[in-house]
Length: 510
Ligand code: BES
Ligand code: MN
Ligand code: ZN
Image 1: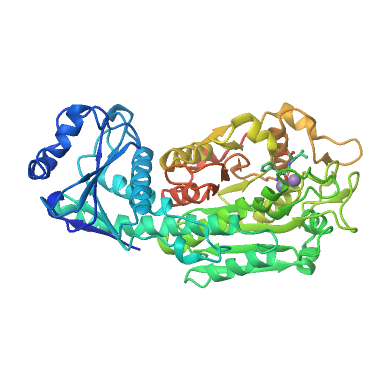
Image 2: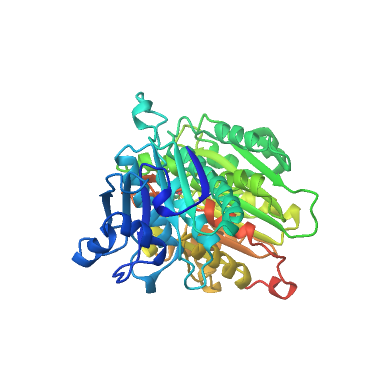
């Protein structure tokens, strides 16, 4: 599908359908619509007057134009109350309208961009969200369908129609950026939705190598023996029960750049989590093919970063393994020595994510990072605490947490902070080793983060628990049931807006 930006009057666009968004309870139609309204015999204003279209968020109505104007149809979509306006309403409305257009199998569509610069939101940001909403809503996972043709989107041309010629250039570049972002999100959704036996550690390593074909990106992958030399026993022990080879992926962007910060992004890459010897129950275990959602988010972010070219030096570290109960598997009660030298009593082999992340966090040190962010489907407790509308956020640095919170608001991948007070660290002390990998029945998300915190050195660090957000259970306006691709847009937004961390903010709290 070709997504473009054009300049023109609504009533003169040659298209199967012109999409027009309206706020709830619009009394007087905006002047940009006067000509179109008049030519169609007051089609829009009479619908509004009769109350047949109220403008509630995601409400839609199709109006035939009977050749009175050039567009064949008008599709009205509600934006909700203007007082509640936000970029996510824009994404939703664009996604909803696109689903209608797709459902009707129209070949082309145009969406009118006008007068949405309210609440200090720029037209560029609106256009970006419109484009995101369109592209993300068209995502469909067809890899394993044999009749792929039926699933292909009908729309071949989609245009964003602007009303001022002088903004066309900037809107065009915004649309291009949104395409890069959406492509990355869909890439991540694809690999998360894939079967565990297909999206193996080796598969992820190969995807990383593909991303590194772009100039400015390097990739190195470590396999078992190399990890052994480095003492990466967290990853190696988790992989013991599996016949799949573990991989440690290292991606690096903008290596030579020293004018901005070095940021390390770490993603949990458990390509299937059976629980290991502490086996999970059968019901719902299939979802644990997506226990590499953090890894996939970092890969997706890198894919976009290689095109958007932000100014910082960015490193991606992705420990990848299966967690299986094979005959050589790690056992409850085993003691392992992680790369940092700390010993861990493994009380539950299903708390495997923290073991592999511990090695990655330790490895991060060599880059002298200005910030480290890890993203992981780490705990069921996070789903219990926050449900599916927010990812858990814990960390040692307020400035970094603020930045991530803001990025989450910008792209509507919201995060919510949980405390990481020192009292919680007491809960993971072990009688016979330095620490244990479970912290008892309370505050599971926090004790998991404390475990990670034990491996963090003196740099700003934030952990994101996406166990509740990596998946959506039913279709939403721009996320189809299945992998959400959470984290990709958040990390991209964060890196695009990155400024050097102020020295004063580098003090970390524990
Ligand atoms: N991958 C799971 C966490 C998870 C659960 C992600 C549900 C997504 C949805 C993780 O490895 C795990 O099994 N965690 C255990 C930890 C416990 C044994 C301390 C959990 O949350 O039950
Ligand atoms: Mn587990
Ligand atoms: Zn897991």
